[in-house]
Image 1 (tube, rainbow, N blue to C red):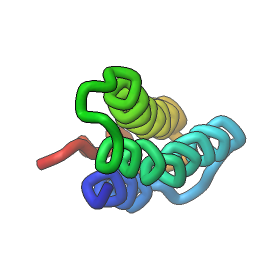
Image 2 (cartoon, rainbow, N blue to C red):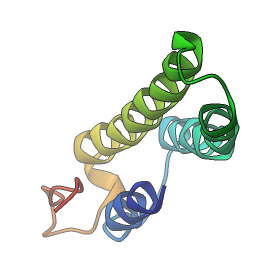
Image 3 (cartoon, rainbow, N blue to C red):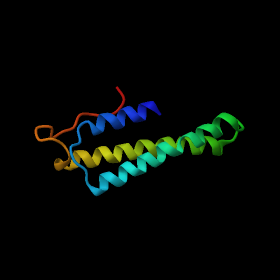
Length: 95
C-alpha cells in the first residue's frame, strides 16, 4: 500500500491544477485504497485454498493500478494540469 501512495505522490508533485476527470479518477483510486484492507484481511484469515479470496485481492490491486494509470494518462494528455516547461511529466511508476 505504501508503494501506491508513493506513486500517487510522485504523480501529483507535477500537477498544478485539476479537472473533473482527474478528480473522479482520483476518487476511484482512493476508493480502492480504502477497500484494500478488506481483501487483505480475508486473505490473512480465510481458507488458503479459496480462489475467490485471491480473486478479490488481486482484482483490488488491478483496479488500484488501473486507477493511478488513468490519472497519469489524464495528466499527460491535459497540458493545463502541469507547469509550463514540464510538458511531459516524468514516469511515476515504481523505481
